[in-house]
Each structure stands twice: as C-alpha cells, then as structure tokens.
Picture 1 (cartoon, rainbow, N blue to C red):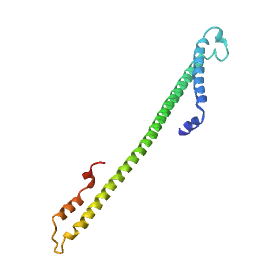
Picture 2 (picture 1 turned 45 degrees about the vertical axis):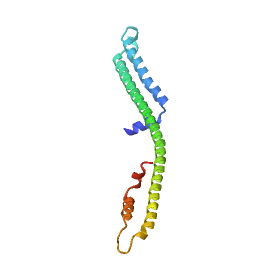
Picture 3 (picture 1 turned 30 degrees about the vertical axis):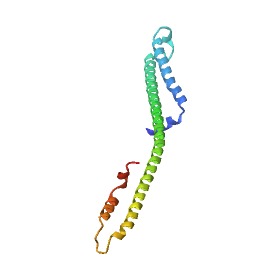
Picture 4 (picture 1 turned 90 degrees about the vertical axis):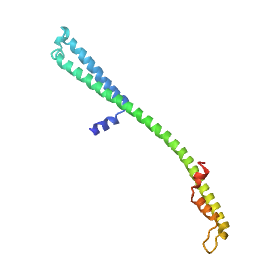
Length: 161
C-alpha cells in the first residue's frame, strides 16, 4: 500500500486535483445522463439507451471515488500545513535555546568565579592564621571559623547573581 502512496506522491498536486475533479464531473455527467437515457429519443442509442443502469452505477462510483480521493488530498494538505507550523516552532525554539544557553553559560562562569574568589580568600586567611596554629595541635578560635566558612557554599552566601 505504501508503494501506491509513493507513486501518487510523485504526481504533481495540480495534476492530481485535475484527475479528482475529472472523476467527479464525469460521474455527475454519467449519472445525470443515465436519467436522460431512459427517455424516448435517447432510449434507442445502442449502448447507452440499452443499459442506463450501468451508466447510473458507474456515475455514482466515479463520484464516490472522486470525492474520496479529494477528501484524502485535502487532509494531506492540512497535515502538511501543520508540519510546516511545527517546523517553524522548532526553529523558534532552537533560537530561544541558543539564547538560553548563552545566559546559562555566563551564569556558570560567574558562579565559578565566585567559588574561585572565595577559595582564594579562604586560602589567604589560612596562610595568615597558619602561624597561630602551634605544634601541640591547639587551635586558635579563629581557625574553626575559617574552616566553617570554607565549608559553606559561596553561592548561597552571595545570592543568585
């Protein structure tokens, strides 16, 4: 079945529409003509006058086939429009994501800088207080404060910048 749709997909849309309209018009003409073929002057036309029911059934079948195919065509066109709209949304989302990625990257760089600066400050404080720590492992009261300060998240101290 997919091969049939693939072959139909190769035919240009304008030609397909002409074929579908031709089915509908030929079916209408055949159906309406079958009503005339039963009347007196047309009754004696060799094939048409003898079998008006065949013309009527053929007309109904052609009308039905034409309307069915035209309905499928219009559905396909609507889906193609929805695909184009979705593709446009994807392009817009990609642009927004690029902008968001830039914002996130700058925020990460800023956070890394805050963490690095805090580490440098704490390391300098440790170097300054290093002399206060003696060989008996007695700590100056400043040392635990510095260690506690080093253990805290500098981002929560500085806020969300």
